[in-house]
Image 1 (cartoon, rainbow, N blue to C red):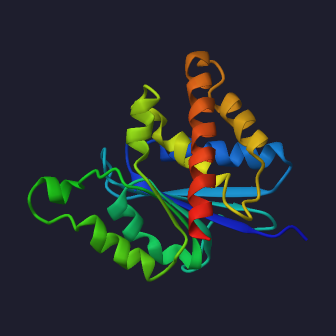
Image 2: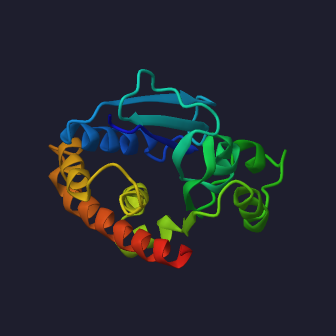
Length: 205
């Protein structure tokens, strides 16, 4: 029986969460795996909270119970903290350190916690945290919009991840079909993410 694998992607509107979810889903379909996904929107505005769930394997619902996600991909630190309850104990966490203050912070109604405070809280759930400022890496590659693809590449380097990197690359080509100019940069970002992930995984053990 095919083992199920549960993924949560957390971030804010405008960061391409739905595209990242679609790439993962397409990669699963390419391999002939059953896959189900859903999105939960918070504030109906740019930078409002959004989470996406994706389940691969013999599953009947896209919903993920608290404490049962194998992987949490956090596109923004505070949104990662808001959704850490989905991750199972010592599940894998990919954390983008690029801070995007939510509207309440931008309006001066709340303070944004320090990265150390966030990491301390995350460490209480898992010791397997892969930290990277994906925006900085994306800028080095020439396009800030590539940060999600970098994070996806990191996911494909995680032990036990159920999808092959080749499927990820094929999925990128399929999702961006018709927009040929962005395919090669995204493939490059995906491969860079895998390299970063493999290096960070080694440092955990």
